[in-house]
Amino acid sequence: MPVTIQMNLNPGLYLRDPQDTKLGRKIIQHSILLIDEIGFEAFTFKKLAEVIESTEASVYRYFENKHLLLVYLLCWYWEWMKFRIDYNTMNISEPEQKLKIAISVIADTTRRNTSVAFVDEDVLHRIVVAEATKAYHTKEIDKENKEGFFLTYKALAKKIADIIAEVNALFPYPRALASTLLEMANNHIYFALHLPSLTDISIEDNDLSQVEKLLEDFAFGLLTRV
Image (cartoon, rainbow, N blue to C red; front, side, top):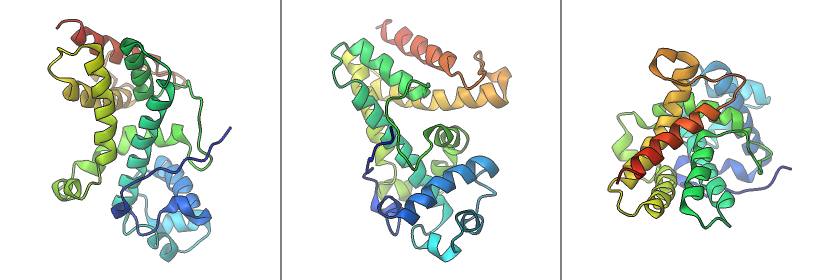
């Protein structure tokens, strides 16, 4: 059943929070679908306005440009991942089990128990896999980082790093392992779908269980060596 969740994202990303209005939520919903369909490079506010039967100016009342819209979508997804980790580990005391749950969320397997009405999380996940690096591999990264645009990603990585530290307090690289797991999941999903000779996993019928197994073997293999 769809639930109402208000993500608290950096107000510097938007001119008006699209979560607050029917049109704003429509912009989010259809920008996700359109970016997935045609790719971020071909995506424009003019094309989005045509899809939602509105004006290009109305989209610009929410976002200054499509780069900030992409960062907004990614921040929404990272905050959503953090929410899912918190939600699914709420009553779990064993650190190893908490890490397995976090890895399941990172891999984004189909075991879902929450959803948001105006966001198709499966489609947004495909955008994260295909387009995420375009948001922070830019010349403006240092400036945008100072403005706090990536605090949600840092908070997500810290959540995972804290769980890693619970599993093994002597492991010297919890933050590095956390960020590696996040990037590794996206990279190997992308490789499996488009450059299969660069990975040892395969994906069929959107089954991401091999990604989850890869991340578990990698993480616990390192954590049990120390």
